[in-house]
Image (cartoon, rainbow, N blue to C red):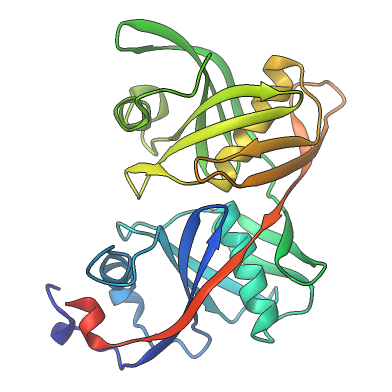
Length: 286
């Protein structure tokens, strides 16, 4: 497909543009499923283009579910499917609540599993219960520009590598790409998080994301992975406050397992923003 004329989608299409701590998303109520599955990846690539279309880190289509309030199909800006996205999940929960698709407490399906979400207060603040983290791999050596660095890995719904640095002035795009495609994390690859400790139980996290293939203003699952490793490797304690590249903050809550080598009952909480509501025309795909 090279243009909108080859697609079978009917326009206009209603959507909301939302942001969660700097991650931005195009969210569409897709319970009537008017975008063919075979065309969704290309559709996501086109509408997520900045300058030429709406522009976003990802596209979220909300569909009906037999086991939860709804399910999502989440596409990165390059058209690839994302297993999970913490900030996208928080924005999705607010969207679903405000559109009457769910109550303040809800459950929805993702590739990574069922996500539980809760709308707090007036609705801007959202808390989600993450899927159980797994595949812990700590203290692996990885060479970046001639310096051997310790890398920690955990899957928080999405595979994440975590590297602690003394300061936040890292070449995130260059190093992030090396980590993302490193043989240690094949075949899936990994998002790369560069983390600095900036206070008691407080972190600054910069993330290079798969699918976007660049540094993003925030990554919820990356913030969770970084917080987990800060507790396991740096002796911090929950809750962990995380400042993202966009300047906003998330709070990560969890319990240590009995053996102290992993975490459980992971919650992420933070603000969401409705940027605008609109309608896509066929020209958004040109």
